[in-house]
Image (cartoon, rainbow, N blue to C red):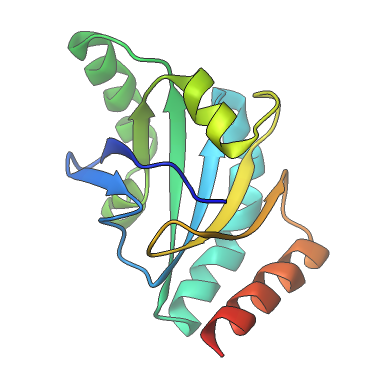
Length: 152
């Protein structure tokens, strides 16, 4: 299965086409739909920061995924998120997607928006690992195993 090609701007204002313009040979993508899902995302951040510091070919991104809005609404939403993320590097890792969510969800087999969805993809968008929800040691081991297998 491949991650669908989608475009969005990071919170620094730079345009990205996923997976084409992502920095890693492997990219860990966190798809979130609801504002309250910041808490489950935060459970992953310490592991992901350590991962990118020890595996320079791996990067991670948060993908707040919203329906298509007009420019003014997008600007207001992005400004609110930008205000909550002071670190420029974390802003660069947060790429807001204003897309047709039904098509996106169908392409990824996402059944609902009640949790966060996690994907490890290569630079061509091939999904090497996927899961949902908060961080756990079992999920950490599975991610590290998928990375190790890919890099062999």
